[in-house]
Image 1: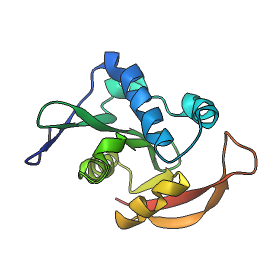
Image 2: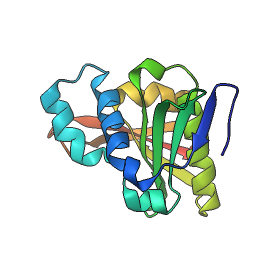
Image 3: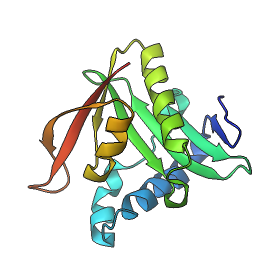
Length: 156
């Protein structure tokens, strides 16, 4: 567990998967997407209990124990994948995203990866670039025909 004066990272419990998936949807909706858009994304924004059990998920809490964000990595792809990184809308700018991103890189490095791949929402691209990820190309969305999403990579 890592902590800063106001933020702590912890392993989630498997029974938190549904609540953390809901956090992902609230975060997605923050960027102005309508309910139908968010609902269509829901199957892709799920925290996986198997990845929780495998120690591939972390939660950021504030000093009062309130959950601010979640990150999930998947080491099973061509390179390590940042699968999910979502922050409660009220907590954007608190440093929780940076802490979760740093944990994701360290966890994938510990799993033997040398690179982290990120298929990002367009609104999150700037965050990932500030964290040091490099834009590679736009890739088609699995959810919406004709929608392109930024693909980024980060050395870990």
